[in-house]
Length: 103
Image (tube, rainbow, N blue to C red):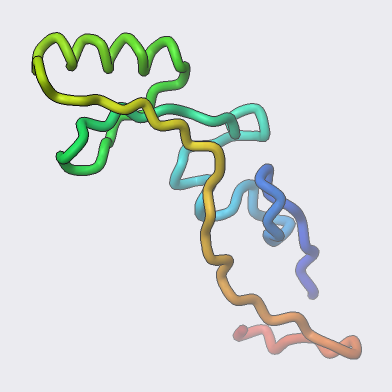
């Protein structure tokens, strides 16, 4: 029995019986509507930001709040526009060869 190829909401090939690719599952994405840019607030000179803000307004409010708490420090608002990743290797069987059931 061969498995059919399907596509994740992000466009990556997945097996038909899968709903999302591993990366989209990790990001808690459900469909293409969830795949929108988001924002981080970065305190210059500190570790990488960790809180995702869904809107520019939310990130701006947080940057201003933090700047008021830390006079003299600079806070940058960063927008994530895209995600890059390595796609896992897949074997495609040629010439109608059916893979062994143990694969």
